[in-house]
Length: 162
Ligand SMILES: *[C@@H]1O[C@H](CO)[C@@H](O)[C@H](O)[C@H]1NC(C)=O
Ligand SMILES: *[C@@H]1O[C@H](CO)[C@@H](O)[C@H](O)[C@H]1NC(C)=O
Image (tube, rainbow, N blue to C red; front, top):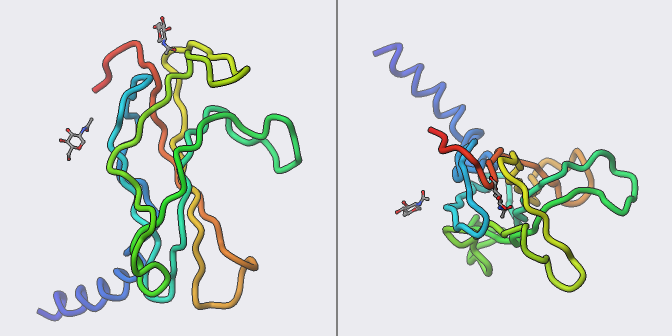
């Protein structure tokens, strides 16, 4: 009983910090996603007591940024959208909740206008979420803090994985 009580005390101390970590729940790491296929998406925002989540942007990163220096090609990929999720008091009513699934672009098709497509197979890309948040502790970076979460996904896999 003593152990159980102290376990509960320890858990209740830990839980508020664990709730809302800014985590990509779906897709799971290593998920194979075909060009043009829809895939389930789920992101757990950071919202918590003393932590507010304002919005999060979802990208597919095909080429990771190498530096913060201005450049013609900072990174490669695709922008799925900027969404928000309920967390009181910052966002009592989400204006643009993320859909339960997103559609993987077919990069072999022309990307619109002059944009040429490229066919590739078996590429590991990062599905990434940049979340804008802030806390009640007035230290750290000025303005909204921006966190990054990412999971690797396999685009146009040639073999069926587990
Ligand atoms: C996506 O989620 C729906 C509903 O939970 C489920 O029926 C479906 O099998 C999922 N699709 C994939 C590709 O995991
Ligand atoms: C997917 O990979 C196959 C080869 O395995 C290739 O023929 C095809 O063009 C690729 N598709 C896309 C959309 O890149």
